[in-house]
Image (cartoon, rainbow, N blue to C red):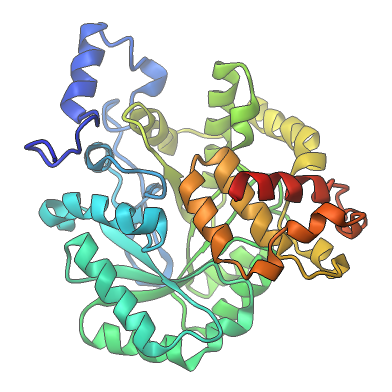
Length: 388
């Protein structure tokens, strides 16, 4: 049963949140947490490549967000680009977003996803899109992205382009995009840009592993590709910082670092609580300071021996062909993103022979294969325990 305003029971509404803040004399927000709009500064808009869409510098990521009223607050703060996908919370992210879009579709540009594998058919892609539109309570999305592409050749699939052409002709989509999380991001971006068929790209982009990607993004942007970037916090490891103030400072610095990239039109951030909205949107009008840059560099040095880049090099050393990069990513979702159920479902969806069970009796071939010195076997065993 839902409340009369469409908010599920137990969920805080915008009115609840700001009533509480008012009762504390505004202290619950604090000046550092007052959004750009509240400070009299409008959310900056940037052009998303050849799409010519003027999108907010901060975009709203829906994975892990289940309160529609938080999105309402973000839209009110000037956010106009929203990223979602049918696999997020088993479709519930799109359903939650749909509660807002049925009344405020004109206030947002929508991105959703197509799961793309070697065997995916055109009919499956079109059926997936129709399901997304139904959940989103709209007749079209602005960008449809091929999701989590690690193999550049997948972008050439005729089924993908035939499905997009049909959906575009029917008025269900406007632009084609792709996203990539793993080992081949620069190669996938290069391939997409060279094809001229992809208008938008959403790569993982953070201060830990940006060097190979920076020149590729700059070149692709010159060719008209628009970039909205994600996972700028390097696996949300700020949760390991015990000092809450320092953790927040790190989180904000990582966002400002990404905003400083001239190829980036928008930085996609998950804002799951009302208090996240003003503190995050305020960053769109701030520059990264020298102290903040130094903090990120120090953090990168400390985190490097613990940070999996999903480069896939250790996979070549595994005689059992365990899906190491995928499992490490699911472990990340479980431990650092709070997406326990989604992570377990993703792990269960792997073929049984590619899960981490063989690691129990293995001597650790993958450890020697990691160029960064991670104890990969230890993390895989932990992942298997968490995800089963």
